[in-house]
Image (cartoon, rainbow, N blue to C red; front, side):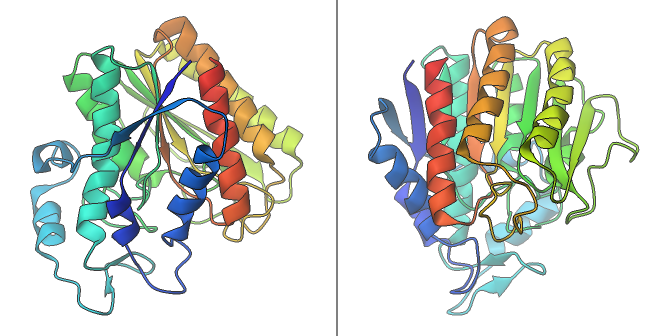
Length: 307
């Protein structure tokens, strides 16, 4: 199966600082690993997300502030660890635009599977708040665009080591949307434990720090019946690879290797094949060890291509 690859060199222009872990080399590590593989990918340029698409999730006051920001030579600090450089607005719009374009192409039948190699990531950005390296809530914006394109029931599966609090904030209680998220616990940002109250369209699972990969897999498996019961028309993956054992931000707290992400991807594809005509769009989130990031993203996209 051919996978469409959505990315753009403009996303290298997001430069939050020389020592910041969300650095341009991350994108190069992913696209380089894919380019050096034997996978047949269909390259597509990521467009700029329209403000109207972003407004389906983000409040107008928030968008006005982000669009009006004028970073100088030093990155502009938006929150504790989220920054904007002169190229960040374009990069963030292309990151969201990649996933929006992918879901629209999938809805139109132009492709069945897509991977969006994007930065900055998005799953921590809340409707009115930048957070955790994220400016726009990429997958949440794309989910609303998918619904507008006729895919009424959209599920997001998030396997980043950190909880997708922004996606949860955008989805909580909304008809036709479902979030299944696994994260290390305890772990920043302190959300995503199953004991925390949420609406029925949110399913969270946790894996303890230092747990063997079998524990993580069992927790991930517990989410799949919920996604299956939702019977989505499309699955969007928040593909964070910072649960890899080598990852510096994950702290090695999870013992995952590239094959674990491929295994999770096959489980997601199985649900998509049953309910969504195989439709899966994946968007890059975390992953900060360059070698682990490249190998994990390649394993993930290979699993998407295998069906």
